Length: 155
Image 1 (cartoon, helix red, strand yellow):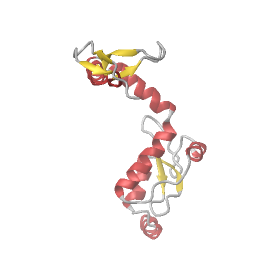
Image 2 (cartoon, one colour; image 1 turned 60 degrees about the vertical axis):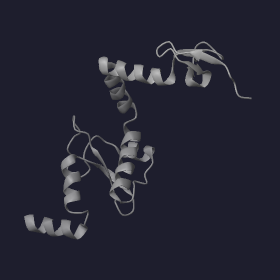
Image 3 (tube, rainbow, N blue to C red; image 1 turned 180 degrees about the horizontal axis):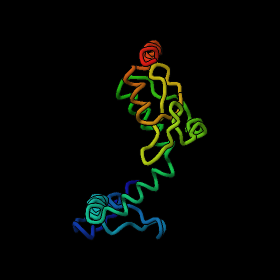
Image 4 (cartoon, rainbow, N blue to C red; image 1 turned 30 degrees about the vertical axis):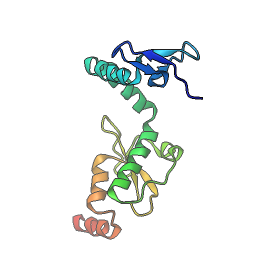
């Protein structure tokens, strides 16, 4: 049965069906927000523009609590965009492997975060690298022979 109940939005003052309003979780069933969904979204955007700091603080807290989850999502998303195999590791595996130091040069993580490194052909997780080592591997196209020749060259 389709409900024909309506409510007037406090902001745009339009008479709209109840499914155009968010339910009020704290008031129980049958209670809805004063503003329609569209006006509520606009108010949220305006509020974030007028007072951005709480939103930034929340984003920082969220990123800190979900660091490994976000690193894995970013790696998989970037991999798909660039056309290579996404990282196949689990969140638990990358979290366990994290020591706070680059696995190649041993640089300690500072404000610059370590990068999740994986094989672009197989998706196998290899470890955490500093920006310099990650870029260096990329510049050598992850080619072991090229890395050996470079090592011999600088010796």
